[in-house]
Length: 224
Image (cartoon, rainbow, N blue to C red; front, side, top):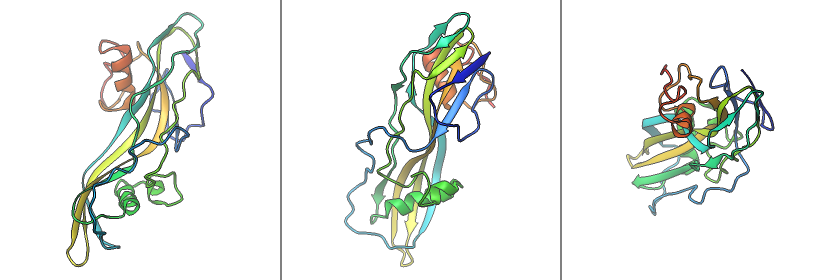
């Protein structure tokens, strides 16, 4: 079955799925900024510059940011008309739990280095370390399918979280947690088509569970 995706930016990452799934990836966005984009505690002291970060509990996963209701199309397909509704607003933030306040931008750059993302470390990159980063815009009603089936559009980000310990040369320590997101994108799946080799926490499978239903072939995907 052939699927055409129209009105979307060029894909910057490889397609998530095969067969009837189309995917795009982009960074930034033009949606309003989240109201809690830089949540922090209220320590009064500022930590030293040039300290050492130790990261643990680092987790990278796809998180759904928007989802449309499933739509059934007959022979010949057509344009999908269901709106992708927001589910989650991604944040870029650093929270401080103990010790003096550490520079949030430096902390997020360190997290970017920890996950091995050169663009997250680069100050001129896509904004991983920017606590004022705008949430990605949700595109919808942009897909046309050439064939019958029951289809679902969704949007996602690849979210990164991690706990850190920051140590200065004089032994002063600070602890906290950072959250950000690398790429964002959108996808299209067909409910009766299994998603091969997909991890249980990835966005397409969650979209299938929520919109197609847990009994659908897409939701019963084989895990890689």
